[in-house]
View (spheres, helix red, strand yellow):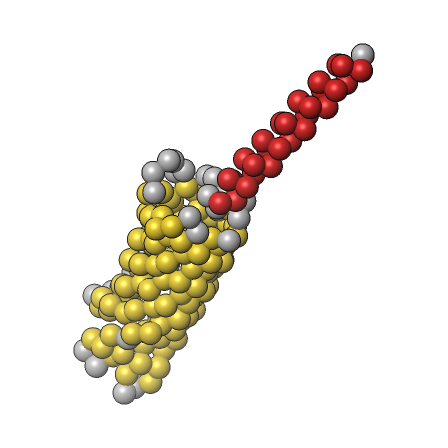
Length: 180
């Protein structure tokens, strides 16, 4: 009886230590871990026949709930405006909440899809005045993370932030991400 208890205790302790070691590996690969990042995005603001190209800088913070699912918040602001026909177009700011669906694998490249909601504020300014529009919409996109080091990766991402009627906001972003 005592031998059986000892054997059960040894096996339980061994399994627990393997689980802890696996959990540590899991955190190293960002599953269950926090992350933050910065992106520069080349954004296309389309309104009717006008197509303005602006730039944005954004930050994100998130958590990998599983190796396949991340939950994150993002926020950003415009850093480069575009002038078309005497009208200055700008993406003043945006923020939102998203889920990332990651295709976790053994390579340093991880493809992912993004789905969430974004609130955007777009501004058009001319000699006749300034028009500002802010609204929210479902957002979606595709991206690719590339691991540079155990806690550092870069990403390339396409996002459709907003679309209503003849107005759309699309972005192609380049960024860096730090995993904790």
